[in-house]
Image 1 (cartoon, rainbow, N blue to C red):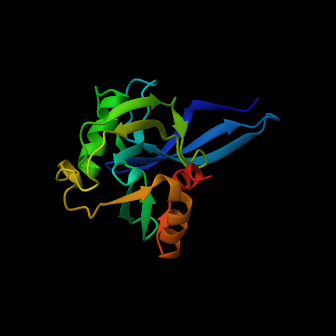
Image 2 (cartoon, helix red, strand yellow):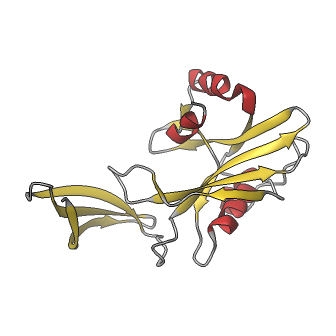
Length: 192
């Protein structure tokens, strides 16, 4: 069985948000291997709390159910992305509290109801140990433009809320990709 010996982790470099590590591990046939990974420096001390939340939000409107997405520029890939609202869980905060806070900060929506929370999910396990909880949130019926002003660090980041009709989701994602946006894989998989 393959395994990682956490005592043989070498720190290669650290920034405010990330740490690059080289791990020494054993393969299934007993050989030694090395692997580089990125680790969040903001990880909770509680291993049962994921690093972040990703919020799948349905907004009820007179035009029907809308999926709430966020368009933002992501420097690591040099493109605008289409994502679901997301963010880090603050120390001492529950998963549900983090989801509702991030939805308010990134999109300006309040009054959401958390309907389900996933177990911790890997985002990119070949690159990082980061994990997230997928949180389903329903927003009560309201006009699509009823959102509040953005809060916290989200002000001035160029976040754009994109509302997509639930019954036209896949077609709209294809149009957004054709327009040059990079669709986050988790968002695309929601349309399948």
